Amino acid sequence: MLTPTKGIAPDRALLAVGAQILQELDSPLTVSQAWARLKARRSELGHGSPVSFGWFVLALDVLHALGAVELRDELLMPRRP
Image (cartoon, rainbow, N blue to C red; front, side, top):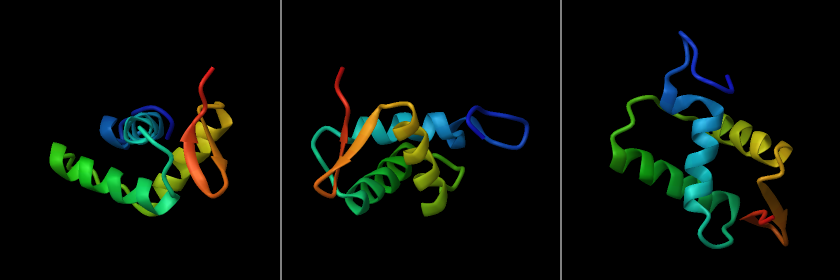
């Protein structure tokens, strides 16, 4: 799940989806805004593997566990070192 496997396409692995989420966090966003941006970007780039909202949330969980994002005042933002 975290990395690509035989059953999980590279553009659908949680680390890849997490990286795509981080690219969209150029400013603080609500979770809904981040989800909408991710869907739009994946569509623009022609990613064939679908990502459900549940998978998006799992990617956010991975990012939070890695200390890469935080939720402050209901806004999702990257955590800077």
